[in-house]
Image (cartoon, rainbow, N blue to C red; front, side, top):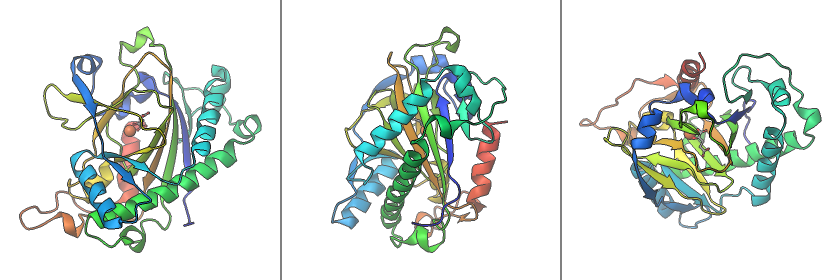
Length: 316
Ligand SMILES: O=C(O)CCC(=O)C(=O)O
Ligand SMILES: [Fe+2]
């Protein structure tokens, strides 16, 4: 496996107050008034022997939806179950115990409401298999993410090893977020439950859920009223989505699609794995994504500067 920056892990109760800052739009009223339907996202078989065809599906999915499913992805079902079980164990703790892991520098627990409390970490003693489970999950998801990036590169008419060759995966940045959406809606949330509309910051996100619905995407963010479509659960598949950094890298050929999680009257667990290039990777318009008629829309930027800027504007 490639060298890797120390992975960051975040535990989040996904009620509004803790999420609100990072979202581009989506007031409670707007969420309620938006139209909705459901979407059939493409499914890409990562074990396909026809790499070119798989890459073409990935490209189409990234251009049209910014979201797709992957199957035969190499992340064991038992491992996913173990991560969800550890997560449930943590979120089931009394609040005062969870607060001992209160978030510092983007790691740790974010409570439902953003109080400022200081507490120490006692993670390891309380959850003996936590570290190994999360380490294995992160390593496996990283491996899967790299395979997806190879297909993305091929789909962009680049060498399958493009991201490796430019050093973007020498020391990639990974971030694991364990999310818990409580079943009951708190009155003070004003009906704005779950994760408000947002796009992810980085390159790609790999998402698993416990199968509870709630995830929706909005493919045309400027449309009025917005059309929100349910992303249904496919047993055993991972959901992959493109983040803003990859949208920028591809000169907006690929979409970083607005998404949110709405209340379904049932508690929900999910695990989001964010994969970004190493921080000194220069993200500048890929050759195959610009032309004289469609010049680069953004100046080059180091991946780390871009992500840090986004995170800092979130957690001010
Ligand atoms: O919980 C989910 O299904 C989505 C989570 C998400 O979009 C995020 O953490 O960025
Ligand atoms: Fe997201």
